Amino acid sequence: MSNSSNPGARADTPVKAAAVAQPVDTPVVALGQARSVGEVLAQSQVEEVIAELDRDLVGLAPVKARIRDIAALLVIDKLRINLGLVSEAPSLHMNFVGNPGTGKTSVAMRMAQILHRLGYVRKGHLVAVTRDDLVGQYIGHTAPKTKEVLKKAMGGVLFIDEAYYLYRPENERDYGQEAIEILLQVMENQRDDLVVILAGYKDRMDTFFESNPGMSSRIAHHLDFPDYSIDELLHISQKMLTQQNYVFAPDADAVFKRYLGLRVQQPHFANARSVRNALDRARLRQASRLFADRDRKLSVDDLQTLTAADFAASRVFLQADDRPDA
Amino acid sequence: MMTNHGNRLTQGQFSYLPELTDKQITAQIEYALGKNWALGVEYTDDPHPRNTYWEMYGNPMFDLKDASAILTEINACRETFPNHYVRVTAFDSTQGVESVQMSYIVNRPKTEPGFGLTRQEVGGRQIQYTVHSYATDKPEGERY
View 1 (cartoon, helix red, strand yellow):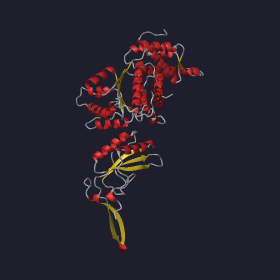
View 2 (cartoon, each protein chain N blue to C red):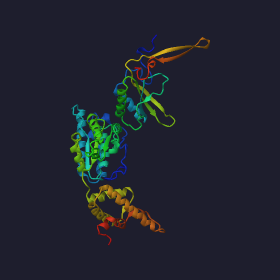
View 3 (cartoon, one colour):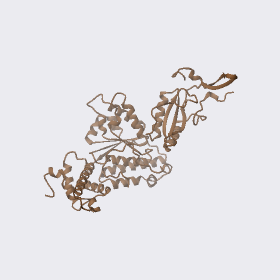
View 4 (tube, rainbow over the protein chains, first blue to last red):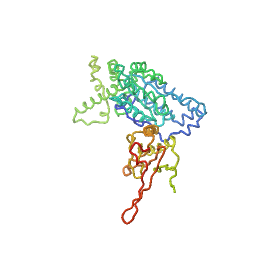
Protein backbone atom coordinates (compact mmCIF):
# COMPACT_ATOMS: atom_id res chain seq x y z
CA MET A 1 0.00 0.00 0.00
CA SER A 2 1.14 3.54 -0.61
CA ASN A 3 2.76 5.36 2.24
CA SER A 4 0.28 8.18 1.98
CA SER A 5 -2.43 6.00 3.47
CA ASN A 6 -2.17 7.78 6.78
CA PRO A 7 -5.88 7.92 7.46
CA GLY A 8 -7.19 11.41 7.50
CA ALA A 9 -3.91 12.82 8.68
CA ARG A 10 -1.65 14.95 6.62
CA ALA A 11 2.07 14.55 6.43
CA ASP A 12 3.92 16.73 8.90
CA THR A 13 5.63 18.71 6.21
CA PRO A 14 3.49 18.99 3.09
CA VAL A 15 5.17 17.19 0.28
CA LYS A 16 6.48 19.89 -1.97
CA ALA A 17 6.22 19.10 -5.61
CA ALA A 18 6.05 15.42 -4.80
CA ALA A 19 5.15 13.22 -7.68
CA VAL A 20 2.14 11.40 -6.37
CA ALA A 21 1.11 9.23 -9.21
CA GLN A 22 3.39 8.20 -12.00
CA PRO A 23 1.70 5.24 -13.62
CA VAL A 24 3.82 3.34 -16.07
CA ASP A 25 2.00 4.46 -19.18
CA THR A 26 -0.89 6.78 -19.76
CA PRO A 27 -3.57 4.98 -21.73
CA VAL A 28 -4.42 8.03 -23.78
CA VAL A 29 -4.84 6.34 -27.13
CA ALA A 30 -7.05 3.60 -25.77
CA LEU A 31 -9.04 6.15 -23.82
CA GLY A 32 -9.79 7.95 -27.05
CA GLN A 33 -11.65 4.94 -28.42
CA ALA A 34 -13.64 4.06 -25.34
CA ARG A 35 -17.39 3.96 -25.89
CA SER A 36 -18.76 2.78 -22.55
CA VAL A 37 -18.34 3.90 -18.96
CA GLY A 38 -16.84 0.52 -18.18
CA GLU A 39 -14.19 0.93 -20.85
CA VAL A 40 -13.15 4.34 -19.62
CA LEU A 41 -12.99 3.07 -16.05
CA ALA A 42 -11.02 0.00 -17.04
CA GLN A 43 -8.56 1.91 -19.16
CA SER A 44 -8.02 4.82 -16.82
CA GLN A 45 -7.83 2.66 -13.69
CA VAL A 46 -9.62 5.44 -11.88
CA GLU A 47 -11.75 3.00 -9.92
CA GLU A 48 -8.64 1.76 -8.16
CA VAL A 49 -7.92 5.22 -6.82
CA ILE A 50 -11.51 5.67 -5.68
CA ALA A 51 -11.51 2.28 -4.01
CA GLU A 52 -8.23 3.14 -2.31
CA LEU A 53 -9.74 6.40 -1.16
CA ASP A 54 -12.69 4.50 0.32
CA ARG A 55 -10.41 2.04 2.03
CA ASP A 56 -7.71 4.34 3.35
CA LEU A 57 -9.71 7.33 4.48
CA VAL A 58 -12.09 6.79 7.35
CA GLY A 59 -15.45 8.58 7.32
CA LEU A 60 -15.72 11.66 5.06
CA ALA A 61 -18.85 10.21 3.43
CA PRO A 62 -20.01 13.49 1.80
CA VAL A 63 -16.52 14.14 0.41
CA LYS A 64 -16.27 10.67 -1.07
CA ALA A 65 -19.71 11.04 -2.62
CA ARG A 66 -18.72 14.35 -4.22
CA ILE A 67 -15.50 12.89 -5.58
CA ARG A 68 -17.44 10.03 -7.09
CA ASP A 69 -19.81 12.55 -8.69
CA ILE A 70 -16.92 14.54 -10.11
CA ALA A 71 -15.27 11.36 -11.42
CA ALA A 72 -18.57 10.35 -13.04
CA LEU A 73 -18.84 13.72 -14.77
CA LEU A 74 -15.31 13.44 -16.06
CA VAL A 75 -15.86 9.91 -17.34
CA ILE A 76 -19.04 10.91 -19.17
CA ASP A 77 -17.25 13.95 -20.57
CA LYS A 78 -14.53 11.66 -21.94
CA LEU A 79 -17.18 9.56 -23.69
CA ARG A 80 -18.83 12.66 -25.13
CA ILE A 81 -15.52 13.86 -26.51
CA ASN A 82 -14.86 10.44 -28.02
CA LEU A 83 -18.13 10.66 -29.92
CA GLY A 84 -17.39 14.17 -31.10
CA LEU A 85 -19.86 15.98 -28.85
CA VAL A 86 -18.26 19.29 -28.10
CA SER A 87 -18.33 20.36 -24.50
CA GLU A 88 -16.22 23.02 -22.94
CA ALA A 89 -13.33 21.85 -20.83
CA PRO A 90 -14.91 21.53 -17.40
CA SER A 91 -13.73 23.89 -14.71
CA LEU A 92 -12.07 21.66 -12.18
CA HIS A 93 -10.82 24.15 -9.63
CA MET A 94 -11.94 23.15 -6.18
CA ASN A 95 -12.31 24.47 -2.71
CA PHE A 96 -11.83 22.19 0.29
CA VAL A 97 -13.16 23.56 3.55
CA GLY A 98 -12.96 21.88 6.91
CA ASN A 99 -11.33 21.97 10.29
CA PRO A 100 -7.67 21.06 10.68
CA GLY A 101 -6.79 17.40 10.36
CA THR A 102 -9.87 16.40 8.41
CA GLY A 103 -7.88 15.04 5.49
CA LYS A 104 -7.89 17.89 3.00
CA THR A 105 -4.31 17.33 1.84
CA SER A 106 -4.72 13.55 1.62
CA VAL A 107 -7.84 13.93 -0.49
CA ALA A 108 -6.11 16.51 -2.70
CA MET A 109 -3.37 13.96 -3.45
CA ARG A 110 -5.96 11.38 -4.48
CA MET A 111 -7.76 13.98 -6.53
CA ALA A 112 -4.56 14.66 -8.45
CA GLN A 113 -4.31 10.94 -9.18
CA ILE A 114 -7.90 10.71 -10.37
CA LEU A 115 -7.52 13.74 -12.64
CA HIS A 116 -4.31 12.34 -14.03
CA ARG A 117 -5.75 8.91 -14.79
CA LEU A 118 -8.64 10.50 -16.64
CA GLY A 119 -6.25 12.70 -18.57
CA TYR A 120 -7.38 16.06 -17.22
CA VAL A 121 -3.90 16.90 -15.94
CA ARG A 122 -0.84 15.71 -17.77
CA LYS A 123 1.54 14.77 -14.96
CA GLY A 124 -0.60 14.37 -11.85
CA HIS A 125 1.80 15.75 -9.27
CA LEU A 126 0.66 17.83 -6.34
CA VAL A 127 2.40 21.06 -5.42
CA ALA A 128 1.40 22.16 -1.91
CA VAL A 129 1.99 25.83 -1.13
CA THR A 130 0.95 28.46 1.39
CA ARG A 131 0.88 32.25 1.29
CA ASP A 132 4.64 32.46 1.84
CA ASP A 133 5.36 30.62 -1.40
CA LEU A 134 3.17 32.92 -3.48
CA VAL A 135 3.43 36.39 -2.01
CA GLY A 136 6.63 38.40 -2.10
CA GLN A 137 8.08 40.79 0.43
CA TYR A 138 8.56 43.90 -1.65
CA ILE A 139 7.14 45.55 -4.74
CA GLY A 140 7.76 43.49 -7.84
CA HIS A 141 8.62 40.35 -5.91
CA THR A 142 5.18 38.76 -5.94
CA ALA A 143 4.57 38.28 -9.64
CA PRO A 144 7.73 36.27 -10.41
CA LYS A 145 7.28 34.26 -7.22
CA THR A 146 3.70 33.34 -8.02
CA LYS A 147 4.56 32.58 -11.63
CA GLU A 148 7.41 30.35 -10.51
CA VAL A 149 5.03 28.30 -8.37
CA LEU A 150 2.45 28.17 -11.14
CA LYS A 151 5.06 26.89 -13.58
CA LYS A 152 6.07 24.19 -11.14
CA ALA A 153 2.45 23.13 -10.76
CA MET A 154 1.71 23.00 -14.49
CA GLY A 155 0.57 19.60 -15.59
CA GLY A 156 -0.54 18.86 -12.06
CA VAL A 157 -2.50 20.19 -9.13
CA LEU A 158 -1.68 23.33 -7.17
CA PHE A 159 -2.84 22.97 -3.58
CA ILE A 160 -3.01 26.27 -1.71
CA ASP A 161 -3.35 25.58 1.98
CA GLU A 162 -5.01 28.23 4.13
CA ALA A 163 -5.78 30.20 1.02
CA TYR A 164 -7.67 32.91 2.91
CA TYR A 165 -4.33 34.32 4.08
CA LEU A 166 -3.77 35.50 0.52
CA TYR A 167 -6.25 38.27 1.08
CA ARG A 168 -5.58 40.67 3.95
CA PRO A 169 -8.23 43.37 3.99
CA GLU A 170 -6.62 45.19 6.92
CA ASN A 171 -3.64 46.14 4.77
CA GLU A 172 -4.62 47.71 1.49
CA ARG A 173 -1.08 47.58 0.19
CA ASP A 174 -0.81 43.88 0.81
CA TYR A 175 0.80 42.03 -2.08
CA GLY A 176 -1.61 39.10 -1.68
CA GLN A 177 -4.06 40.78 -4.03
CA GLU A 178 -1.45 40.69 -6.79
CA ALA A 179 -0.96 36.96 -6.29
CA ILE A 180 -4.73 36.44 -6.43
CA GLU A 181 -4.96 38.32 -9.71
CA ILE A 182 -2.23 36.23 -11.32
CA LEU A 183 -3.86 33.08 -10.02
CA LEU A 184 -7.23 34.09 -11.43
CA GLN A 185 -5.74 34.77 -14.83
CA VAL A 186 -4.10 31.36 -15.00
CA MET A 187 -7.16 29.59 -13.57
CA GLU A 188 -9.23 31.09 -16.37
CA ASN A 189 -6.87 30.89 -19.33
CA GLN A 190 -4.85 27.77 -18.69
CA ARG A 191 -7.51 25.40 -17.46
CA ASP A 192 -5.99 22.43 -19.22
CA ASP A 193 -2.56 23.17 -17.76
CA LEU A 194 -3.33 23.02 -14.08
CA VAL A 195 -6.04 22.55 -11.50
CA VAL A 196 -6.08 24.75 -8.41
CA ILE A 197 -7.38 23.46 -5.09
CA LEU A 198 -7.86 25.97 -2.30
CA ALA A 199 -8.16 24.78 1.27
CA GLY A 200 -8.95 26.35 4.60
CA TYR A 201 -11.32 26.72 7.51
CA LYS A 202 -14.91 27.17 6.52
CA ASP A 203 -15.73 30.56 8.04
CA ARG A 204 -12.51 32.19 6.88
CA MET A 205 -12.84 30.78 3.38
CA ASP A 206 -16.39 32.14 3.21
CA THR A 207 -15.12 35.62 4.05
CA PHE A 208 -12.34 35.17 1.51
CA PHE A 209 -14.80 34.35 -1.26
CA GLU A 210 -17.11 37.19 -0.30
CA SER A 211 -14.30 39.68 -0.77
CA ASN A 212 -13.02 37.97 -3.94
CA PRO A 213 -16.06 37.29 -6.10
CA GLY A 214 -13.81 36.58 -9.07
CA MET A 215 -12.26 33.69 -7.22
CA SER A 216 -15.59 32.34 -6.05
CA SER A 217 -17.08 32.29 -9.54
CA ARG A 218 -14.13 30.40 -10.96
CA ILE A 219 -14.38 27.56 -8.51
CA ALA A 220 -16.92 24.97 -9.46
CA HIS A 221 -16.60 22.46 -6.68
CA HIS A 222 -16.91 23.24 -3.01
CA LEU A 223 -16.21 20.24 -0.81
CA ASP A 224 -17.05 20.36 2.88
CA PHE A 225 -14.93 18.17 5.13
CA PRO A 226 -16.91 17.24 8.25
CA ASP A 227 -15.29 16.62 11.62
CA TYR A 228 -14.74 13.00 12.53
CA SER A 229 -16.95 11.26 15.07
CA ILE A 230 -15.35 9.59 18.11
CA ASP A 231 -15.75 6.15 16.53
CA GLU A 232 -14.12 7.32 13.33
CA LEU A 233 -11.25 8.81 15.29
CA LEU A 234 -10.78 5.50 17.09
CA HIS A 235 -10.80 3.71 13.75
CA ILE A 236 -8.19 6.15 12.47
CA SER A 237 -6.01 5.58 15.53
CA GLN A 238 -6.16 1.85 14.99
CA LYS A 239 -5.04 2.26 11.40
CA MET A 240 -2.20 4.53 12.46
CA LEU A 241 -1.03 2.05 15.09
CA THR A 242 -1.16 -0.87 12.67
CA GLN A 243 0.99 1.12 10.29
CA GLN A 244 3.59 1.69 12.96
CA ASN A 245 3.42 -1.86 14.27
CA TYR A 246 1.77 -1.06 17.57
CA VAL A 247 -1.40 -2.51 19.09
CA PHE A 248 -3.81 -1.44 21.81
CA ALA A 249 -3.82 -3.60 24.93
CA PRO A 250 -7.27 -5.17 25.34
CA ASP A 251 -8.47 -2.50 27.75
CA ALA A 252 -6.53 0.39 26.24
CA ASP A 253 -8.84 1.26 23.38
CA ALA A 254 -11.71 1.91 25.79
CA VAL A 255 -9.51 4.35 27.71
CA PHE A 256 -8.41 5.99 24.48
CA LYS A 257 -12.03 6.35 23.44
CA ARG A 258 -12.77 8.19 26.68
CA TYR A 259 -9.68 10.29 26.09
CA LEU A 260 -10.99 11.23 22.65
CA GLY A 261 -14.40 12.09 24.11
CA LEU A 262 -12.74 14.57 26.47
CA ARG A 263 -10.18 15.87 23.98
CA VAL A 264 -12.79 16.73 21.35
CA GLN A 265 -14.37 19.21 23.73
CA GLN A 266 -11.11 20.99 24.39
CA PRO A 267 -9.88 23.89 22.26
CA HIS A 268 -7.43 23.37 19.38
CA PHE A 269 -8.65 19.92 18.56
CA ALA A 270 -7.21 19.02 15.15
CA ASN A 271 -8.97 15.77 14.36
CA ALA A 272 -6.66 13.13 12.90
CA ARG A 273 -3.58 15.20 13.64
CA SER A 274 -4.47 15.38 17.34
CA VAL A 275 -5.03 11.64 17.30
CA ARG A 276 -1.58 11.11 15.92
CA ASN A 277 -0.05 13.40 18.51
CA ALA A 278 -1.88 11.58 21.30
CA LEU A 279 -0.57 8.27 20.01
CA ASP A 280 2.94 9.68 19.82
CA ARG A 281 2.73 10.75 23.44
CA ALA A 282 1.45 7.32 24.42
CA ARG A 283 4.45 5.79 22.67
CA LEU A 284 6.67 8.10 24.66
CA ARG A 285 5.12 6.92 27.92
CA GLN A 286 5.33 3.31 26.87
CA ALA A 287 9.01 3.79 26.11
CA SER A 288 9.83 5.32 29.48
CA ARG A 289 7.76 2.66 31.24
CA LEU A 290 9.82 -0.07 29.57
CA PHE A 291 13.02 1.89 30.05
CA ALA A 292 12.54 2.02 33.82
CA ASP A 293 12.74 -1.76 34.04
CA ARG A 294 16.37 -2.31 33.17
CA ASP A 295 16.81 -6.01 33.64
CA ARG A 296 13.60 -7.28 32.18
CA LYS A 297 13.80 -9.24 28.91
CA LEU A 298 11.33 -7.53 26.57
CA SER A 299 9.21 -9.61 24.23
CA VAL A 300 7.65 -8.51 20.95
CA ASP A 301 4.39 -8.20 22.82
CA ASP A 302 5.88 -5.84 25.36
CA LEU A 303 7.39 -3.68 22.69
CA GLN A 304 4.32 -3.31 20.51
CA THR A 305 1.57 -2.99 23.08
CA LEU A 306 0.28 0.35 24.33
CA THR A 307 -1.43 -0.27 27.67
CA ALA A 308 -4.34 1.54 29.30
CA ALA A 309 -1.89 3.20 31.70
CA ASP A 310 0.01 4.79 28.81
CA PHE A 311 -3.16 6.65 27.85
CA ALA A 312 -4.55 7.21 31.32
CA ALA A 313 -1.53 9.31 32.26
CA SER A 314 -2.62 11.99 29.81
CA ARG A 315 -3.24 15.43 31.28
CA VAL A 316 -6.55 15.54 29.45
CA PHE A 317 -7.90 13.25 32.14
CA LEU A 318 -6.35 15.38 34.87
CA GLN A 319 -8.04 18.50 33.60
CA ALA A 320 -11.31 16.73 33.30
CA ASP A 321 -10.84 15.55 36.88
CA ASP A 322 -11.94 12.16 35.82
CA ARG A 323 -9.17 9.64 36.28
CA PRO A 324 -10.31 6.42 34.62
CA ASP A 325 -8.09 4.24 36.75
CA ALA A 326 -8.99 5.91 40.04
CA MET B 1 28.81 31.02 -54.87
CA MET B 2 26.44 31.42 -51.96
CA THR B 3 26.46 28.33 -49.81
CA ASN B 4 23.86 29.51 -47.33
CA HIS B 5 20.83 30.88 -49.11
CA GLY B 6 19.02 33.56 -47.18
CA ASN B 7 21.88 33.65 -44.73
CA ARG B 8 20.00 31.47 -42.28
CA LEU B 9 22.09 30.67 -39.24
CA THR B 10 22.55 26.92 -39.12
CA GLN B 11 23.56 25.99 -35.62
CA GLY B 12 22.29 23.18 -33.42
CA GLN B 13 19.53 20.79 -34.27
CA PHE B 14 16.77 21.28 -36.84
CA SER B 15 18.44 24.37 -38.27
CA TYR B 16 17.97 23.24 -41.88
CA LEU B 17 14.24 22.75 -41.27
CA PRO B 18 11.55 25.41 -41.36
CA GLU B 19 10.97 27.18 -38.02
CA LEU B 20 9.60 24.83 -35.38
CA THR B 21 6.00 25.45 -34.39
CA ASP B 22 5.05 25.66 -30.72
CA LYS B 23 3.57 22.20 -30.96
CA GLN B 24 6.82 20.80 -32.33
CA ILE B 25 8.83 22.59 -29.66
CA THR B 26 6.53 21.13 -27.00
CA ALA B 27 7.15 17.67 -28.40
CA GLN B 28 10.92 18.22 -28.27
CA ILE B 29 10.68 19.49 -24.68
CA GLU B 30 8.66 16.45 -23.72
CA TYR B 31 11.31 14.21 -25.21
CA ALA B 32 13.98 15.96 -23.14
CA LEU B 33 11.90 15.85 -19.95
CA GLY B 34 11.31 12.18 -20.53
CA LYS B 35 15.07 11.68 -20.37
CA ASN B 36 15.32 13.76 -17.18
CA TRP B 37 17.27 16.52 -18.83
CA ALA B 38 16.99 20.07 -17.50
CA LEU B 39 15.95 22.65 -20.04
CA GLY B 40 17.34 26.13 -20.37
CA VAL B 41 16.62 29.15 -22.55
CA GLU B 42 19.52 31.20 -23.92
CA TYR B 43 19.76 34.26 -26.16
CA THR B 44 22.44 36.20 -27.98
CA ASP B 45 22.98 38.80 -30.66
CA ASP B 46 26.45 37.51 -31.46
CA PRO B 47 25.92 34.16 -33.11
CA HIS B 48 29.55 33.51 -34.10
CA PRO B 49 30.02 29.72 -34.39
CA ARG B 50 32.73 29.87 -31.72
CA ASN B 51 30.52 31.84 -29.32
CA THR B 52 29.48 28.85 -27.22
CA TYR B 53 28.23 30.70 -24.20
CA TRP B 54 25.04 32.57 -24.87
CA GLU B 55 23.27 34.57 -22.16
CA MET B 56 20.92 32.52 -20.01
CA TYR B 57 17.35 33.68 -19.78
CA GLY B 58 16.58 32.84 -16.15
CA ASN B 59 17.97 29.77 -14.47
CA PRO B 60 18.12 26.30 -15.96
CA MET B 61 14.74 24.76 -15.23
CA PHE B 62 15.73 21.81 -13.10
CA ASP B 63 12.48 21.91 -11.16
CA LEU B 64 9.93 22.08 -13.97
CA LYS B 65 8.30 18.85 -15.00
CA ASP B 66 5.81 20.03 -17.58
CA ALA B 67 6.37 21.20 -21.14
CA SER B 68 3.83 24.01 -21.07
CA ALA B 69 5.67 25.69 -18.20
CA ILE B 70 8.89 25.67 -20.21
CA LEU B 71 7.12 26.92 -23.32
CA THR B 72 5.84 29.82 -21.22
CA GLU B 73 9.43 30.67 -20.40
CA ILE B 74 10.51 30.39 -24.04
CA ASN B 75 7.71 32.70 -25.11
CA ALA B 76 8.64 35.18 -22.39
CA CYS B 77 12.20 35.22 -23.75
CA ARG B 78 11.00 35.65 -27.34
CA GLU B 79 8.87 38.56 -26.24
CA THR B 80 11.74 40.22 -24.39
CA PHE B 81 14.24 39.67 -27.21
CA PRO B 82 12.18 39.54 -30.41
CA ASN B 83 15.22 40.37 -32.55
CA HIS B 84 17.80 38.10 -30.93
CA TYR B 85 18.67 34.49 -31.48
CA VAL B 86 16.99 32.33 -28.83
CA ARG B 87 17.85 28.69 -28.34
CA VAL B 88 16.62 25.93 -26.08
CA THR B 89 19.17 23.63 -24.48
CA ALA B 90 18.66 20.35 -22.67
CA PHE B 91 21.28 19.54 -20.08
CA ASP B 92 21.99 16.01 -18.92
CA SER B 93 23.22 16.13 -15.32
CA THR B 94 24.14 12.45 -15.16
CA GLN B 95 27.57 12.07 -13.65
CA GLY B 96 30.14 11.58 -16.36
CA VAL B 97 27.94 13.21 -18.99
CA GLU B 98 27.20 16.63 -17.51
CA SER B 99 26.76 18.35 -20.80
CA VAL B 100 24.23 19.70 -23.19
CA GLN B 101 22.39 17.01 -25.12
CA MET B 102 20.08 19.11 -27.24
CA SER B 103 20.26 22.62 -28.57
CA TYR B 104 18.00 24.23 -31.13
CA ILE B 105 17.13 27.74 -32.22
CA VAL B 106 13.56 28.83 -31.57
CA ASN B 107 13.78 32.51 -32.48
CA ARG B 108 15.90 34.45 -34.94
CA PRO B 109 16.11 38.10 -36.09
CA LYS B 110 14.01 39.21 -39.04
CA THR B 111 17.05 39.82 -41.20
CA GLU B 112 20.24 37.86 -40.81
CA PRO B 113 23.16 39.54 -42.54
CA GLY B 114 25.31 36.45 -42.12
CA PHE B 115 29.10 36.15 -42.00
CA GLY B 116 31.91 37.52 -44.07
CA LEU B 117 35.14 35.70 -44.79
CA THR B 118 38.19 37.68 -43.65
CA ARG B 119 41.59 36.97 -45.16
CA GLN B 120 44.73 38.01 -43.39
CA GLU B 121 48.09 37.89 -45.06
CA VAL B 122 50.89 36.83 -42.72
CA GLY B 123 54.55 36.00 -43.08
CA GLY B 124 55.62 34.32 -46.29
CA ARG B 125 52.42 35.42 -48.08
CA GLN B 126 50.51 32.83 -46.07
CA ILE B 127 46.77 33.47 -45.77
CA GLN B 128 44.82 33.01 -42.54
CA TYR B 129 41.07 32.83 -42.78
CA THR B 130 38.37 33.66 -40.27
CA VAL B 131 34.65 34.38 -40.34
CA HIS B 132 33.19 37.59 -39.09
CA SER B 133 29.56 38.37 -38.37
CA TYR B 134 28.45 41.54 -40.17
CA ALA B 135 26.02 42.21 -37.37
CA THR B 136 28.74 42.57 -34.77
CA ASP B 137 30.10 45.67 -36.48
CA LYS B 138 27.39 47.53 -34.61
CA PRO B 139 27.39 47.83 -30.84
CA GLU B 140 25.52 45.41 -28.64
CA GLY B 141 21.78 45.93 -28.61
CA GLU B 142 21.69 47.59 -32.06
CA ARG B 143 22.81 44.62 -34.11
CA TYR B 144 19.54 43.34 -35.48
